[in-house]
Image (cartoon, rainbow, N blue to C red):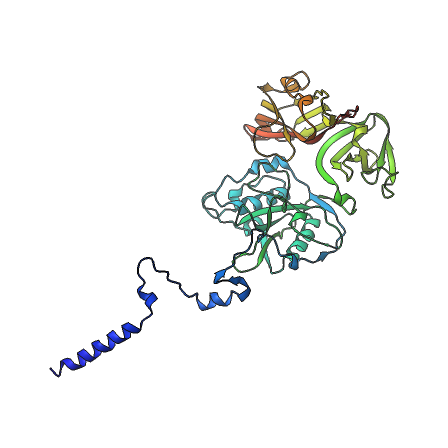
Length: 463
């Protein structure tokens, strides 16, 4: 009996301890059990972030950098874009899925810097797009980390002015993490803060290689798990040619890069800015284009008045802007494919008929199809408003005498902004020197231009 007393005393103490245990520890089904946060985690939450016992989640705009982080930027350039070889980028291709965005963004940068197509797989330590791990050092890129978003923006401008595309880590409404290549900036105003709205990107998931505005695509810088912004920069000796503008007026204009010969069909003033010298004191006349004189156009510019001008280089070395209504577009080249004698829409009057004219020639490439589409400006999904296709083996084609001109009824378009695109599929695609077979069934975008259908005013403008 005495031997059992210590055992009974111990059992009684245990029962007393259990009676003092918090009831939550034995919650029944349906009871609410609130776990206390870990001490370290609780320290990260301020009283302002807790309302009525609930942790307040950031708003839907949380992917944007806080405005208090921004500071004025003082720089001389308003607009800049690196030279892009779209034919090489098309060979690299687009991300089809998985997690290979970093590899593709790096491949775009190295392709532009090296002058030859670099497949994304050259920078992938994994086995495919679903198992992708980017090797930045394989592309001679180094990771720089910043705690200040403004420092990232300013370094991006510095790298771009040196001819170097960069890669950044971003996020937005539609993605928690993504890598894109930055190839230019726009609308930079001296003394105003830099934001995502100032930078132009090549998105691995985009449908084409037209640079997109980072902010308008609802993307912005993202911090890594370590709490820093990641910027990937080239440390090789390579650099790209660039086109940049220091004028604050030009920073407010819209530029579409082109490569085309234009011919003056009436006397045209060559201006320092894309606006009339009589209306803008800064637009000093620097020369003229006589009737029949030609110049190389490198950009189509929409100025602040909605007028279109060409940025041109003349045979005597002058560079300036001519009013597009004074010129006729000439030849545009893509490898050994050329479009010449072009007459394309530029500014039309609603209800007026218009016929696309021009000749497509190929010296060695053989086309298996030619397609023309008209879509509303900015529309990226859905069926085009107008579409025409020629499915045949082509080495020469007159647009005016083809089904394309007959199908594109521009007089059916209401007033608004539109985009005309002309694409071809090459059964055999040779390099521009005509010696190397680069691709089979390669899709080439021969032409992409914006035009306006204006309300009827008795005048018709031709491109």
